[in-house]
Image 1 (tube, one colour):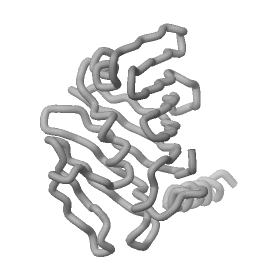
Image 2: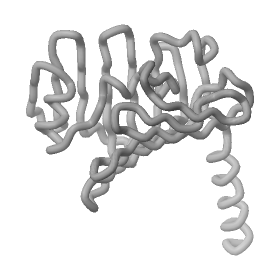
Image 3: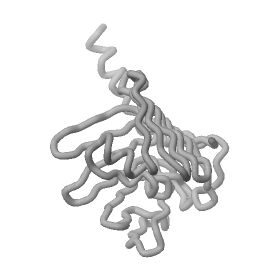
Image 4: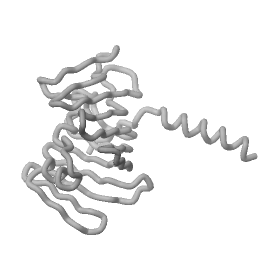
Length: 185
C-alpha cells in the first residue's frame, strides 16, 4: 500500500507546485501599485543560507513584512515607512533605523535593496536598467544598479505577474522568491 501511495503523493505535490500563483483582486501587472504577496524564500550569502516564508503588504510608502520559518513560526515583523524602519523579532527585541537599507545592513551584515524590491517583484525596473524580454514581452531578466533579477511566470499572457524571481549581485547575497499568492493589500 505504501509503495502505491508514495508515487501518488509525489505526483500530487508536483502538480501543486506547478500551479500559477493566485491573484486576488489585482489588476494587470502594469497597473498594480499596492499589493500583498505570500512567498517562500531562500537567502544565501557567503555560504550561509536562510529559508522560510514571507508575507508582504506594500501600500504606497509603507511596507509590512512578516518572516516565518519553513514551518510557519514567525521570526520577525518589519514595518518600513518614509520616516523609519522597525524590526520586531520573535524574542521581543526591537531594532529601529532611519531607513530599511540601514536596518537590514545592521541585522544581516550586508545590504539588501528592500526599496527596489517592491518594483522588482512587479518586474518594474528603474529607467536606466537593462531589460531582456521573453516571447510574451515580459521582463525575463533585469540588470539594475549592480543587481541581476531573473524572472519566471506560471501564467500565460503579457500582463502575468511573476511567480519566481532571483535577485543577486556579484559577491553579494542571492534572494530567491517563489510567489505562491498575489493579493490586494
